Length: 250
Ligand SMILES: Nc1ncnc2c1ncn2[C@@H]1O[C@H](COP(=O)(O)OP(=O)(O)O)[C@@H](O)[C@H]1O
Ligand SMILES: [Mg+2]
Image 1 (tube, rainbow, N blue to C red):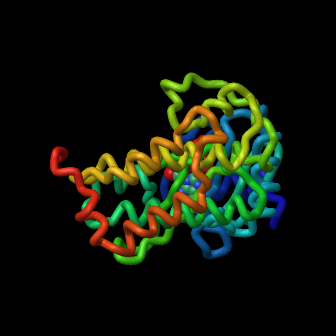
Image 2: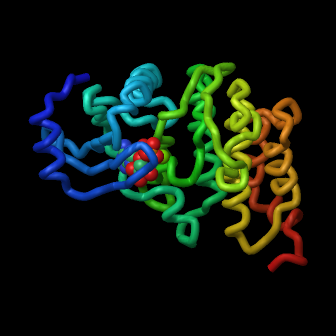
């Protein structure tokens, strides 16, 4: 991991290939780093120094688990992270793309989220524009990005927001209570509900599963492993689609 100098950052930014995104913390551009494509994330304000430092620490600890980008370099003032490039297609960009089996993509997201949990972390901000999808529709490769709110399970992240405008956050997280794996289960349930809504049929068992995942009480939510098992049954045996499809919705 390199400590980047201002000149190098300025040059990379000036010669950027394109802007990849703008989030609430800053801008991200596709740049060239020693002949490799890389994503350069620049903070909007110096006050995000600690957030960027924390994100860098978590990326180092994850070492690619969950598809997390690899940290190539950083600078604290002004705050900058240079990480591996994960393509330019977010889950939010393919929500209406029929060539992808989104339920299968959703299952892959579940596997990646499980890797983050196995490393001891709660992502805390799982949503469709924090998931990158590379590869072909037949073999999609999923990466969960944006570890700005990630914490160890049981810690508080002091987030404020209105549940109506931020519906993917678990209610306890918005009340500054501890974030646990169940908070990610809530966000995963919300994301998977969005995926199901893109399908012409209804899947009663999955509908119910994602509703339970979004229970206001974290203790009443299913575990991530249980959710993965149920979704696996759907994606590996197409027959269950037929049994469960609701003829009323079409
Ligand atoms: N490693 C990466 N590879 C490709 N695109 C990225 C990468 N990191 C971020 N992006 C793009 O930039 C956007 C904002 O980055 P993100 O890390 O989510 O910042 P914020 O914390 O501001 O939301 C993402 O939604 C994505 O489109
Ligand atoms: Mg983001």
